[in-house]
Structure formats: C-alpha cells, structure tokens
Length: 443
Image (cartoon, rainbow, N blue to C red):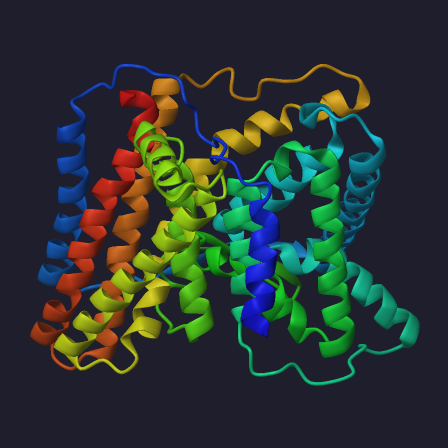
C-alpha cells in the first residue's frame, strides 16, 4: 500500500515534468586551458592527496574558538530569524495565490526556491544548520506547545529513521524542483509549500519533536551539509554561543544510519543530475528515450530514478569492496559520511550564482528594480571558482575517508589498501563532475 501511494505521488508530480531547469551560468566562453588537462590535473590532485595521507599517516582534526556571542545577543538573533522566516512563509503563501503570475515578480517563487531551499543550504555549508531556529513549521509547532504548556505528542516516533525525509527529498528536490514547472508557477509553489508545511506540522503533533529531526527533508539535508562546515556555532557555552573554526572533515568521520547514508548519496547524485540535465548530452538522451518509449516529458522522472538507483548501487558496491579489504563492519554506513564534503561543495558550486541572481530579484516584489549581485564577477572567474570548490570537496572527502579507514581498520597497510577503492571512486567522480560543470563552457 505504501509503495502504491508513493508511485501515485510520483505519477502526479510527473504530470508537470519537463526537462530540468538551469541553476548554472550557461554562457559560453573559452576555458583558460584545455579541458582534458584540467580534468587530469584535478583528478591527480585528489590522488596526490591520498598519497600524502598514506605517507604522513596524519589527519589533522584541530579547531579553534573564533568568538563568543553573549546569550542575550544570540537569543535576540534567533528570535528575529524565527519571526522573519515565519512572516516570509505567510507572505509566500498569500502572494503565491493572490500575487502576480510572473515568477520573478512573485515572493513565493523567490522565497521558496532560492532562499528557503538553496540559500539556507549555503549557510549550513558555512557554519552548520540554522534550520532548527528558522523552520516555520517547527515555529508553529513550538507555538502550539507553548499554548498547551508542553510538547504535543500522541505517540512515539516509529523506527523509521530518516527514511521519511529521504522520500520527501526525492519528491520535493529531486522531482518537483528539478524536473517540473512548479518553481516557475507561483500558485503551484505556494500549494506545494502549504502541503509540505501541513504534513510537517501534522506529523509533529502526532509524533512530537523527533518528527522534525527525521521527517523534514529540508532539515535533514541542512543537518548533513553542516557536518562539513568550516565553522560551527556551539550553543550553551558559558557566557553565550561560541563560533568555532575547524577543519571541514572533523564532522565527517562518524558512521551514519542506513537512511542518512542513502540520503547523502541521493543528495550528491541529485545536484549532479541537475547539472547534467543542462547539457546537450542529456537533451539527446531525454528525447531519444522519450521517442523510444512513446511517452511524454515524464521520461525525465524515469531517467532521474534510474540514475539514482545506478548511483546507489555503485556506491554500495565500492564501499563494500573497500570494507572487505579492511574487514570493516557495515562499510556503507561507515564511509557514506565521507561524501558529505562532496555534497556540500556541489551545493555551493552549483547554486551560488542561482541564489545571488534570484535574491537580486526580490526588490521587484515591492515595485523596485532588480539588483545584479554578481555584476563584479566575470564568468571565467566564477567558473574557476566552481572548479576549485569541486576539487576541494573531493580532497576533503579523501581526507575524511582516510580518517575513517585508519580508525576502523587494524594495521596501517591494510587501512591504506581499504582506502584505495574509495580514492579511485572519488578521482573518477571528480573528473565526471568537472565535465558536467564544463558543459556550458564547451557546448
């Protein structure tokens, strides 16, 4: 019955399916060096990192306190953020239904996709997830609890782990955002936001606060991305909240439960698929499969799900092979956390220009002119920044995987051998990722 319901929802969303919309800069320019040389150099950088780790056998894990914010100030900041996000949530619902139909002039489309979904993700990559504070549905739930004088909960949260969030991520981000016209339709965007908020709030009332920790796809995504953040906000320290600078692999060494492991891999795959869907090669594949199957634009959902299954099977196979070399118990869960830096780097590389561009459109919702927030950034420099981010993300992932292998595998030599399949996977994926982001350059 659950599978039937899920298929029904997918079928409903697929009615709006179209080839994926772009999140990247798509203008052509001449790359500063041959792309083949760039790919080889990037892959070699990741491989050399693994060699240096094997040689030195050291994985720095340092951190340093940057500053401490007084409790009164941090409470004010949190309260302000909560109120503003709740207000923006309400305005998005109203404007989505009653406001202009143009997506660039409606607050719903400008708030939900570039800010709520992508902008907060960038904040999470920088300094950990702020979603526990900003979540509008959690704020509403806390308000109901305040009226009741206690947390509202009618039954314990079942042993579902993060699987509800995993399914929600596939539906909202994988399909609705990337493969349909919903982000371009203010009324549909507001409707999706209302349905999602209602499901979250109802689940919270039934299952209590743990529902938000495990079923909110947005919250789980931000929490996982925050593991690779170079800064971290620690609440509850004496004197207030403390901002700590740390090496980004420090939070990417502990094993994940199966549901969170699947979520991480799906997040990496989805942002890569979104980039690939902008390429001429995808268009050829899209129309070829559509003609062969005799179906409409819904083929994009099929391609996404088939690619996700292939991606998951490949990751499971490589990690299990690595685990067999080092006799690692539950290797998929142990090593899945090491790809979090890749997901974080891709979020920034793929969505930075998207967030900046559409935030610059927000003044149009109040009758003012748009603002080009990236007027100062040449396309060639931005593309170079994307390349650097992708390579850095894979380098951090290699360091994290080395740390996990050394901790779980007995003997240095055996740990290095177990690390090799993961290094090969990350080198290959580095090259593939750079090829994907190069398509606007080379098309």
